[in-house]
Length: 147
Image (cartoon, rainbow, N blue to C red; front, side):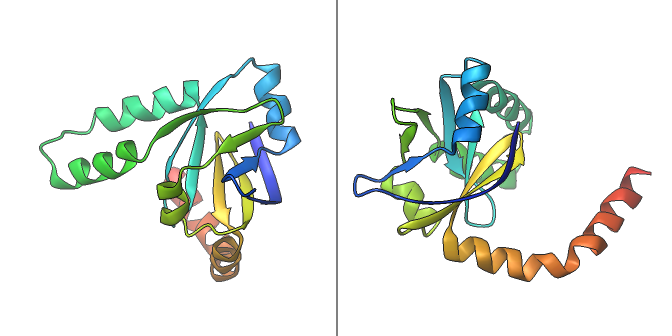
């Protein structure tokens, strides 16, 4: 699975390097293909092929007669692209996804268990700064819902 924060930059061709820890995981489990799409909070989500299929199955089960489900699925799936790491561990980010996430040059690659999130560095720091103060409160609310 994917954990941690990693700072990187995009090269002139729009490629990013997947952190070595993440590449090691992909190699260990012989994962060749991944999917990137529009994520939430203005980041990009990257899923392994198996995790992508699991997510796709969940979202396909939501009735398309619901307006919000149609809107979400359109934005989510129309943004998706299949990627494979090249020999140097790089993947290409399409321009429309970089534009969506407001990614310029500096990025943060965040491991979030079953997915990787790709953020513009400034966006990540804004998000982190605005969220870190409520970490305990959020945890308390989520754990109360579980019990």
